Length: 135
Image 1 (cartoon, rainbow, N blue to C red):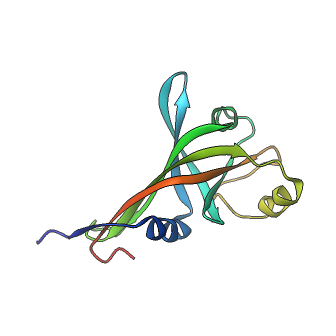
Image 2 (image 1 turned 180 degrees about the vertical axis):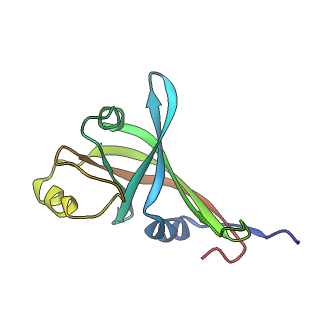
């Protein structure tokens, strides 16, 4: 079996691909160490919007923090797919109108709570790789 060609993605291609996944990993600092959580997300105006449980440590960790976010999709045989990583500034969304719109959005495949918090990651850097025909 021949190797699949890896292709570097532009900033715009990275953001376009992030529109497709729905589940990713947010990387942040917890007790001065790196931590990673699986989160549901959506993209709005080039920013990553994630929903976190109101009773977790994540909302405090994301408050005005520089974080990384990563999502990917690969074929079951791993011969095609993509991975995208972004770095940006995370803030909690507090605008009531925006919260009302987001509360109805299905950002996670698991149960949600009225105490959940929404966070916006304003993307500053984006990089990614596509393997094979990973559209």
